[in-house]
Image 1: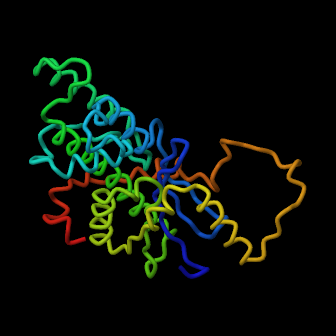
Image 2 (image 1 turned 90 degrees about the vertical axis):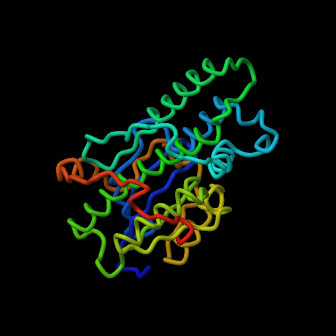
Length: 266
């Protein structure tokens, strides 16, 4: 990215964050969307626990997100369970994943009762439920990202010659989600990138990288660290969420089956 260029970034990070941000420089950000409840990684982990995936030996040592992704890949039909598209009437770029998590619990209770499953038992449709849940998460992400693209282009915040989308954080480690977002980017003439997996989940690497980039630009860091104020909820740059809402941009839901027929192409 050239110094004068901006790019769009979607990322889920430790601490329950999921944000859509226009990045103009290493310390110049415009926030255009964020989660209003759970982050996708949090929803994945809580859902995996309720699914009891760790009771399956193959998934016992995996994180909740990786277990769901692995199980979903084995599903015969990802449309077995139907999920609502969150915030479909809200013309902004915010995210909400708690409703999808609640829908999983509803289906689990329904199927456990149907099969007479108690205790540590796992429903036989677990792969299909994982796939349907993952698909719902993906379509929600794509719907909000598409509106962010439309808003960014309408307001000229993303240059036409540098339409770049970076997917970062834990969500970037999910190949299904990343390939789907990449397919959306291809249709919208965006170049889509993600960091290596180890750089997506290690906060230390992310913080150190930002420090290195600032040093390269000549930033001076103070030495009296005792005087630094700690703010765990510090705002990220300029907040444009209300501007997105005021734009009231209509964007049709992005359905996976209409986006591409063979995800492996991407």
